[in-house]
Image (cartoon, rainbow, N blue to C red; front, side, top):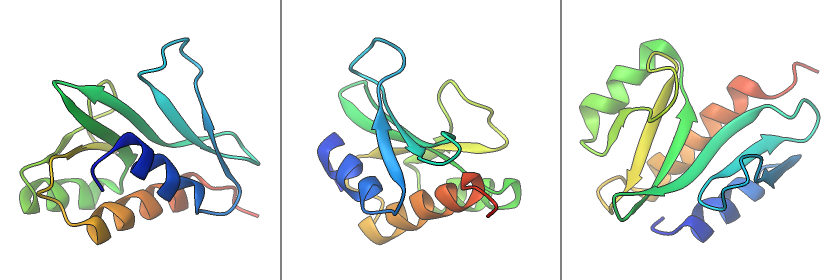
Length: 111
């Protein structure tokens, strides 16, 4: 996963999701659950790279950060519950997808 388009397309493969642009800033794409409108990913460009903010279980935040140099405390978000993934080619696509799916599971409606 290298581009904003790649990230958005993957997020849209998750059932009952949609993309939103609530900040009147096309640099920020927010991926949400349809039923409760909660955000599970924020996709944006910063310092010439695409970044994805994802929600994370607090006990896993440090694990991801220690495993990959390009996973850091989230930009503009709660550092305990959110990570930023910098799409620089160092984090395998499968791991990025797992982090996005985990984020979705944390915010999706509870039936």
